Length: 163
Image (tube, rainbow, N blue to C red; front, side, top):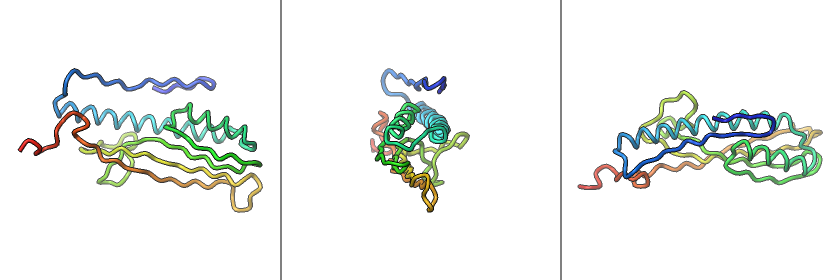
């Protein structure tokens, strides 16, 4: 759960506890719930980022740093800021999401969770050209790095490993 009150954000973290190795069917259920949680978190994060960017004064380096801090508090994995004068700056926002390799798309709220989801680290670059730029004011580019899960890391051996 993510609740915003004034500038404070409260986040309940999904907590998974296990004594010993869970059976594979339980591990699959846990992975699916983790993917749903990532989808919920990402949706809330980008709603909050849109609101922060729309309501922020970003003309000075100090204002840009304040905006970056609000985005970090909203739940971004990390950010990088290259501040500038007169509203010219570059802000990189990193976040995580689940990835469906068969559809070659991020797992969104309400999507079916694939049998073998991946984790994707997304990088979104927000480049502001300044308020009086004739080329338009904002350029946004996005990319991602996808990591297929390793079954050994979840405590279960890969299928066929014992043969």
